[in-house]
Amino acid sequence: MWQTAINDAIGKVKQNIGKHPGRLPHITEGQRYEWGENDDWIEGFYIGLMWLAYEYSEDSFYKEAAEAYLPNFKDRLDRHVALDHHDIGFLYSLSAVAQWRVTGSEEARAVALQAAETLYSRWRPQLGIIQAWGKEDDPENGGRMIIDCLMNLPLLFWAYEQTGEQKYYDIAYRHACASQKFLVRGDRSSYHTFYFDPKTGHALRGGTHQGYEDGSTWTRGQSWGIYGFALAYRYTKDAAFLETSKRLAHYFIEHLPEDQVAYWDFDVPLEPHTPRDSSASAIAACGLLELLELLSADDSDHAIFEKALQSSMESLVSRYATTDLPDAEGLLKHGSYHVRGDRAPDDYMIWGDYYYVEALLRMQKGIKGYW
Image 1 (cartoon, helix red, strand yellow):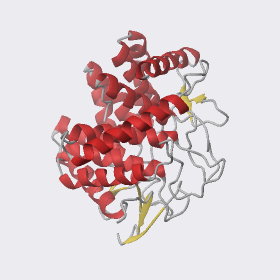
Image 2: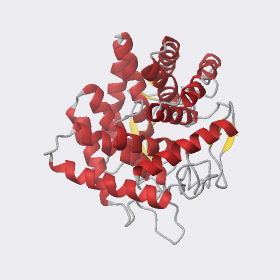
Image 3: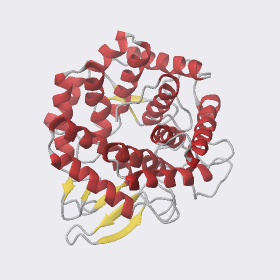
Image 4: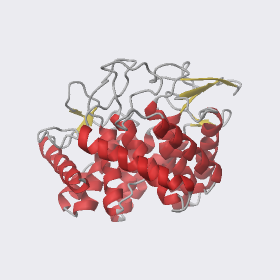
């Protein structure tokens, strides 16, 4: 099953590279990708797919295609194109850091360090967080953190390892601690976002931007937390992060529907056409794989997480993958972006594609991805 799914996925990546040279997939409407410029938060996932495909296949076609985008990503940094957000890790861990990890490229390393410094500039010392969106004086978002940012912290931890500059480690660690304190609720669920008074630094309220309502649990946010806290533990060895990841994973598993693939929010009323979010389940699968590597085989949670991983991935491959659609550009059906905002509630999501392939390759060949 896994082998067939992998071959189909990397074949579609090659097909997309050939059909859309120099272009990048954008969030889409209507069961297709829209191809455009490097000006959103998601373009790194496509480059990451190329590097995964290269590591798996050793076909230089993927390597050359991925390397060709590095000047574009460097130019985006130099001109600060659409970078007033925290998703710089999504963009550059999967492009520049990935290239450095696979090839040892000093050029890619320099771009990645430049990206880490750009992300560092979003640290707000008076709040103790990395600001999610907007400029520092943004009236709506000046005091906002979101759970997604946990997946951007590896870029900072990597920069610390490369340079020895403590500032990168310190803000990544402190942001992870703040995420643990303010975004994780007592019942093991999570807020999507938390807001602080940008002037006083006082904690104000948790809420959501893309979930069903402020008190609900947006499934993709929960999955970011599972993987993000596990990665924070990998870099810091702070046992509290590992425990938090495990708690979030248990909640996610216990609230899945019968086919083991998440709806877009765990608290949304279920109707015949309530959207799923296959991308949330793909991210959670990668988080479970990280946890399985961190836990000993005799840990009581190991068997629970391994069973959940197998069930979820089997469902994604058999029910959600586009293996029966040879001309499809996406790899996973039934992803959702912003259901409440009626933006791509049921479509292909490039990050879902990336995490799906990362999970498959980690399971089949031990290829971990680039976090």
